[in-house]
Image (cartoon, rainbow, N blue to C red):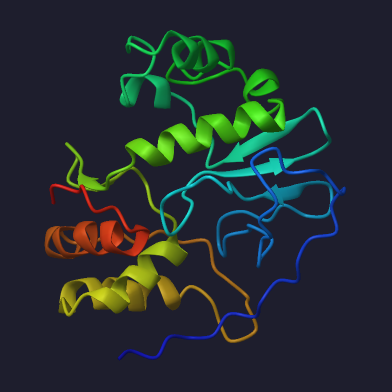
Length: 207
């Protein structure tokens, strides 16, 4: 078992108190991701209580009872998951309404989605989620560093573990991080894709 560098925990956010349209489940963290996203105190993480997976890739943050955004931004997901031209007209209209049937959506629209609609969108995406090796040879869809590091616990690949060591080296024990990107090797990607699917509990994964 590997021992990873401990990054200081971020306290749960103090954003507005907002009812979760997906149910009464309670978040055990603030939804932030080290090195990637800090929601601050002006939004509240709303976990999807109906998500069948073990983790959430796309997370909903509500600014108010009527406005929320999704991280990572779901631009183009209606296209990449064939929702816009799919048989479900309601979902197609929903993704079209918020610009998710375009490669790059309008920030004024995509960052201002009612929480219930945002959770419907993320729930749909998680139903379709499967990590694969993309045409560019990278992990597709993109996975944040904290998921990559967690996935390294599920593989014995030296290439994957070496890549995770690089990711962890970006931050010191006090949480100070340098802005640098590392590119995984082909061997690391090959090992991490099934590990990510296992981490998320994606049992239908083909890789």
